[in-house]
Length: 98
Image (cartoon, rainbow, N blue to C red; front, side, top):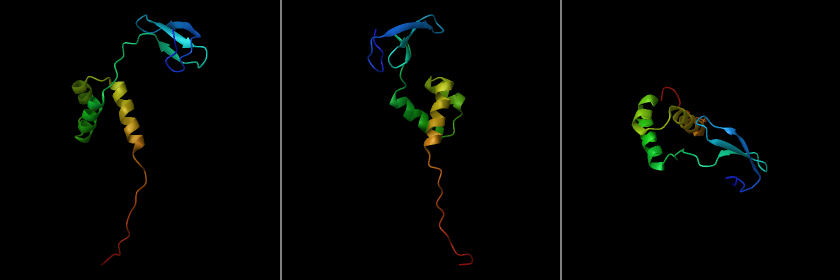
């Protein structure tokens, strides 16, 4: 058994997750992990589809139904996208009455 982060071999059993799979903890870096996770990665194609649906102002619940991602993951993704938008506004001055 190796830690996926630091490749350390000093791991200990640290309880179970919701479906009964054992959870492990690395003694070197402190990361907790599951040996054989069932999670799937969200593909770049799916993320591009989500971006297009967000631009079309489709509801988050609708995006979840269409793409099959979890509502929680989608909310985190949207929050990260929102945080990446710059907050500065540049206005050009125009004289009145011209």
